[in-house]
Image (tube, rainbow, N blue to C red; front, side, top):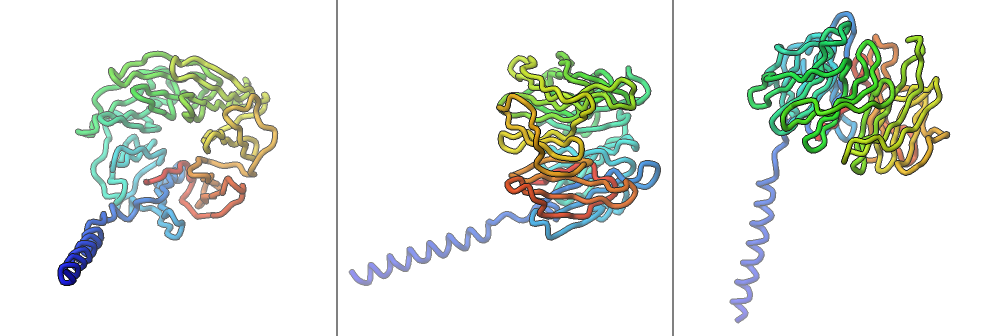
Length: 351
């Protein structure tokens, strides 16, 4: 009996050891050098040169500049506007060069590029089968703006959806695509509502002037509108607009002062975060009025939030390298200041 017990004990130990060994063998291999970090799109010099992309590891210890050039030995072009993702693929929108560079989002190895069918492309978003890119067309012509529809299997533009002038950022909920019309070189005041099941313009929603950013919270679409700036000769106040996404009706409108032009709406839990007049404000979604006290000082070129932290870029003199500032929103204190490329215009998380 003692011998049998010893044999059973040895068998159990062998199984445990084998299980541990198996776990070690089946650990997933890294997807690439740029997995689980932060990507910064740097617009680059406006008149000449190239835009770039910076990489920052999730522990902030590794910082690499110009990673597309490092991996592929070529420049991105002018101006690097934004990045969008679909599974393990990244779509880099290069505005002035009228193209999209397609790379593996983790290794940054080039896959292909789209150069036909784009004219002043701005922002990209995707469903499982299609990508959607906002295009200004000729920025001095308010009648030729459109959304390009990309077949993600062939990586080609298969159709276009004509829309009002100045389409910019996009949000996708279920089969509905919301497009903010900031106005290009002018000013607009609507959202386009696109039915992605048939790629048609379903309706428009009038919001405030110059809608510049959007977030979704509890089935509501919040739209931050900067208002017409003073230099237009027709200055209007900014607005924060709450839209019920079940029927696309405007539920609430919060008016700023006539000279207030807020931007960079993002969300932290139930708090709406935005930048205005050199400071950052926080408003709970249930608050019935706009906040009067700010939480952080700073005028930022781009700004977003994730996991209780604020990620904000400072473009400096717009001719030399900028910085990314990371703020802990539980203490409202800056915890990191990291160099980027020239004119850091977007912050993206490469999870």
